[in-house]
Length: 425
Image (cartoon, rainbow, N blue to C red; front, side, top):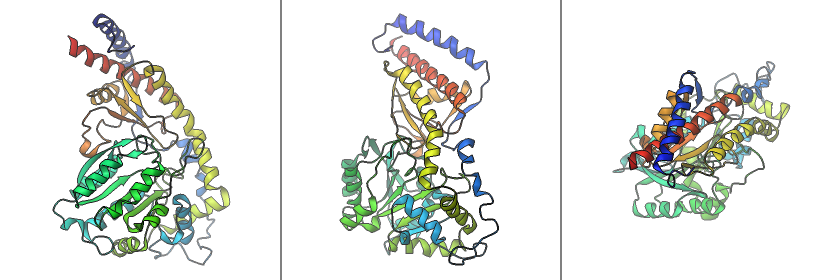
């Protein structure tokens, strides 16, 4: 039903029917969680052969004893894994601990306190700012918020961020020091940046100040659900445009092997890596090289990276299909929301009618379904339209996800109906 074309009597009757259904569900006292993009137990099990894979042989091919101190930039074999994921030369990769977010935080702090490649630290500017494609990743925004870096919203389109606006803003404000990017299967929209967008991003170093950096969080570079989706290589584009210092790339195995015990990577120009290493020397003696060696052995002796990710896709695909089927059945012939159909990644982005997202999330929570807080996909937790909701299908079993989505679409319908009735009563 289209609520804009329905009569008031039809809306009242429909609202009454759905409310009765909702009240019945609430009496079941459910507890379902589709908040964050965590791998399921079935996915984690794919990597259980990491346990014991070293068989007490802790030395690398070059004789390094991974049990001991040292190795600030990580093992060569681990850096090779990062180079494969990011499609960059191994000498431009640092392999760290389990979290790429930690490396991103370290990189932002380096830019803020010390500056990159001899450039002025951002803290010396009057008001350093980051451009934030929205909807986007809440943890990116938390880093900026904690350091007091102002955030500017940039709308996301089907090809990536609005590059006309990005270029305009950079031309107007020399104190814009960075932009967050999740270029493939963006969190949460699932969009993959077009070749033109990547090319224009690579040219930003010609427009922005010398201290400007693109934070290229390629978290889902190998997380295709089906056929491989191509992403243009940002490093190649910056080489062509003479802007290699403008980009720092990040990736990890957090959603590849064991989420809490993976390996993270940062790739950048030598000048940027030198800036990062200068600060790392004061904060660490080196990463967990035993875990890095485990991962290297796992992907050389047990499985290939591609084969492993195909297994992940086989587990995730039915869950995404479940979410998309519910949304299609409920709203393809209704005017109560819109959504993206991602080809990979970990999320489905749904937009309610303006002013409805917070109410939908609360109503779902009252019925026993936890969703990511409305507004979380925008800086400062403020969605100007109060419409975006991020759905994370990966963690719950398929049956629970099916139930959660049934409740979700019910809540969207009820909130939409009640909002419409409030405008005509």
